[in-house]
Length: 287
Image (cartoon, rainbow, N blue to C red; front, side, top):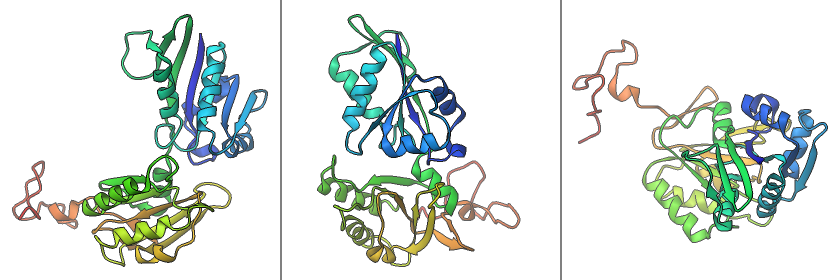
């Protein structure tokens, strides 16, 4: 029986790779991934002596096919994703491929790891989580994601733009902190500006925003701005954009979204504010 591991490699540095990720890469016989991710792993010294298969940016289905085929050939395969494989990563195409091919569960478990069977073909599948871009950039900014957060990709390669716009309106209406993945490319040059225009319909122009390029990599850049500033921002596929909610603020070069303690407690004394009871639902702001 072959083994297929979907490995999240985090932001792209050795310190951001989980211990389980290192273990799986160490025992893998074949490592498959987008060429940039392979180059980063080689720079960490993790691919010596392994068969390496490099694929292009838009070849996700090819990567999934290749990885499953190698695993069904009784190899131990690691298919790598930047960040986390379950967040805009390779977990979905692999699972969809198993479903489409008619694989059935060969064990009585729920979730993963698990064994999947089709006739005489059998593969063990495990998803190895990684630090997704939202978490990586948040650690560089301070605490922008301390309250309810929405992740959105601005790439319309697989999602129609009208649907992305509806989701942006919903995020703005719900006052979510918004993290934008894939904000711009050489072909897509207007989506970030349009996204900012939509969100400006729900929150002030001076709402804190941030641009983080290549988090935890050699060419890392961190830039604080405002929602209005995003109208003129120049970014690329290596940049992640964060837009605060109505309570977000900047402090000493940091991006803070309050968790809400100041609504319930006196932060100097730690005592509950009048009308508030520790452990009970918040009353302030309920009308």
